[in-house]
Amino acid sequence: MQLRYSFRLYPSAGQRSALARAFGCARVVYNDALRARETARSEGLPFPKTGDLSKSLITEAKRRPERAWLGEVSAVVLQQSLRDVDTAYRNFFDGLKGKRPRMGTPRYKSRKDTRQSVRFTANARWSITTGRKLRLPKIGDIKVKWSRTLPSLPSTVTVVKDSACRYFASFVVETGPEEVLPKVVPELGIDLGLGHFAVLSDGTKVDSPRFLRRAEKRLKKAQRNLSRKEKGSRNRNKARLKVARAHAKVTDARREFHHQLSTRLIRENQAVAVEDLAVKGLARTRLAKSVHDAGWSAFVTMLEYKAARYGRTFVKIGRFEPTSQVCSRCGVKDGPKPLSVRVWTCGACGTVLDRDINAAVNVAKAAGLAVPACGAQVRPGLVPAPRSETGTHPTPQPSTAR
Ligand SMILES: [Zn+2]
Image 1: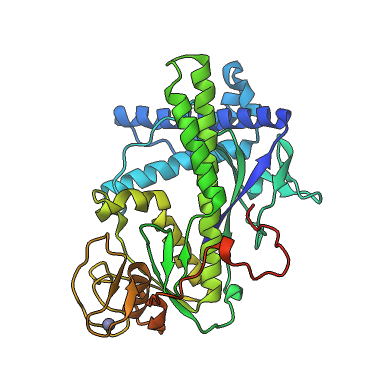
Image 2 (image 1 turned 90 degrees about the vertical axis):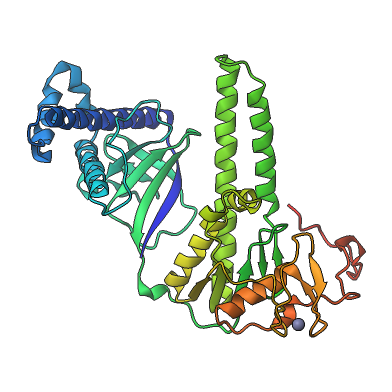
């Protein structure tokens, strides 16, 4: 399986301007190649070959004064730009032939694009130094924050600058079968709760963590601040960058939360089942906003690939399963209930059921998993007391809240 690994880069001021030159040169070669092909197309001439473009747009262009600066960056980066134009055209024509979703003609790149990138292949002789820095030709040794272990060193690295002016090194890594985890017993159903991020068939309700909620609050504040700034003013530009940064923080925090939760659930359970919400079909319902905000589909994608990677079972059950209409204890279907009904008593067996947990158990059962139904029961009188009232510690405990 191919997985993408991204690591934050911290280039120095000099390296940032060298990267800016590389982004710029890669963009110019890309646009020159696009122009050459579009001209040939409009004049009915055959498509210029990549080898010819390489000669005219890189090798020969460097000798002309107005393109001499192309010599300041790694030639491999420029070659890669030509290959990117090739890919863009191939995708476009495959779309016309119906081999993949249709897309527009390849577009020119702008210096105002929020995402800039360059790719270094093995030919560029990039490397990781003994001091764990990323060595790029004609740019230097860049500091990397290795937030995860890279299972193997791939031949290609893409350097990206995003809208919040952050730099990343992105690697595509092939993972092997050696990662399969030892078997465990528990199997789990997961339901998307309305009030919670997810509800598990073992009775756990998972909320988004405090660091994510805090980042979301800061983003809202930055957006409010931006809307008050006068159009075209310098302060508005500053506020816009602040929003971009806050937005990037929310995206990161959310991805981090999804990673932590999905890794834990896949490690602790042999099989995991979710309901296929077909997120697109929900676009106009009241669930839509909460589904989008919670990033449910990104989370489900992680569960799916991690299950494949670690040798676990992943099941998606169809949307038609009436998970909230059936008692997970006795299986009697007693009809739809309005969303406001969170707890009810099964008319057939008398079990008091929690709506979300009952749904999670039903998801697991519909997927054919072995899950005890008792998790969905609510026992009045055994409701856990709030933290402040659970005074069983002999000594005051330090708060775990961060
Ligand atoms: Zn029942």
